[in-house]
Length: 260
Image (cartoon, rainbow, N blue to C red; front, top):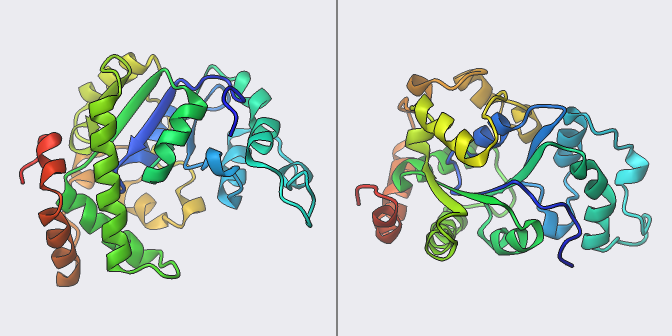
């Protein structure tokens, strides 16, 4: 995808799965001037129906005819021209904008495309993240998804985040831990100052678009340390899965200050 087809992003969130990245993107989103896109997959052409509803809910008037690939039903519009056509002018009119992604294969192409001023590397204790990923997979099953694919996904993400933390300039990137941002208001305020972007949005925004209504019921519309840190009753299979993943993630745990 060509560079510089979009205005420079203010923030990119490279996140561990189940580390509160949607919550953080929602805190950054405040219509009509500040928007953090939730997993738009921009290098792949931003074709998700939930993304369209996310953009419309923010206030962008995007008719179905505009969202449809310019190549028509029989053709597929190239990713770069599609992203530029749909988003360049709309994003240019915002006060702040950014993106959050969790899939490790998307981080480098997204960074090249967005040229973000700040990068948040969002992490979480591996045992807790793996349990939560297992629970989400149970609630939102996908074809071909099994424990092996989940383990590969979360371990690949861990490796990628370690590489980003190692390679990105320290004045551009900051590691943020789920355990801190969900329990410490001062941590959130400090992050907002560093980003020059207040965390003033609704943390539960649009969760129903992603099939995550149970999180709205669990957390409501505010960040609560009691809710974010509460123990969830899961079957032994989930605990066994998390323990097996943790055993393979000692380097990640050490790199980000977690017990291994």
